[in-house]
View 1: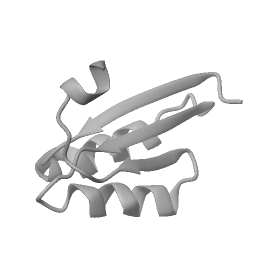
View 2 (view 1 turned 30 degrees about the vertical axis):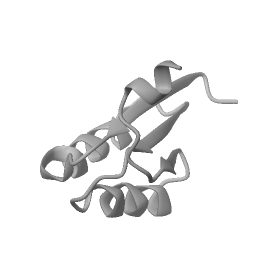
View 3 (view 1 turned 30 degrees about the horizontal axis):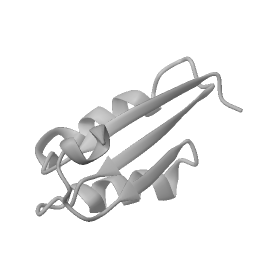
Length: 74
């Protein structure tokens, strides 16, 4: 089990998502996992996240349907 879990909510973040995920992947500390929660993005955020998950097993893409952040509070 990884020492650190990072949770990243994604909704129409394609403009900077790739750079952010690459930065996380390059960290010198490597004992982590990243859960990417796509909330039904209408841009290509999910494709960027899917690409990272395919290249790096520490990244996992979840979600898909837009439910808004309040869904996670209930």
